[in-house]
Length: 323
Ligand code: SAM
Image (tube, helix red, strand yellow):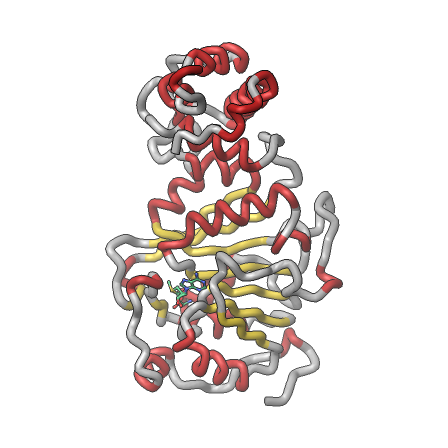
């Protein structure tokens, strides 16, 4: 296909519908890969719109499947597109789209949880982390629900070290999650949905809830609806200690979510050193009666610092894992 000189003017030629693509390539959704397809271009255009100004940007789409969202992305005047899809059955349909596109499309077959992302964008897209101008890069996806939380946690770790995908700077993401996961991402202290994910994501990112998508918009229809979330890394997190330590403290604090936190905090230490739980709360100035979902980021920060200082005194505790 001829390559357009101005990315902004590129539009896809008429193509078979996604329904036709599914029939043509006999593509049945696989449950173990969380395949729920969007076939409605109006909706996928709305997702791309939620990403903001994408013109002349490089885009990574995770799990393009038969390519409905991919088409909307390609029609948005972007610079280039990289696709990472695990299911080899979609590659021929994606190649057809690649052929039709006037914008460079790179198709990578692989597992996004393992795929190296540090070199996938043009080098001139790198921006300084503290720069107000975000890199001209967007990540978009109708994420496979079974890996969305582990993927986000992994990306938060990369954000904390400015590595992997985030070597390019504070890369923006517009992602579809299961409704309840999206709710957890925006839950503030006091909300019943407040969880490890809320605290971790809000520590490292700005999070904006864009709009819900009904379960009936997907084929096959999932049991739950979805929500589109737009996020981009903060210049500096509130909890600045290393990611692994921060995540361990936050995860343990939410172990008995509705109970007083002392019980959960004690799990950071072996039974023989249970008393360090009370000491940790005392050092952090946190009320042992409080419930995890009522705490703000500053309080979690105080907990992390107290845990770190106890680990300095008892180094063996750093590697102790209750689960
Ligand atoms: N983007 C398509 C759409 O909106 O219709 C498909 C979305 S479907 C919810 C999730 C997609 O992610 C599927 O195409 C699935 O094969 C792919 N997928 C599942 N696990 C993956 C993984 N670990 N790495 C990359 N892609 C994955």
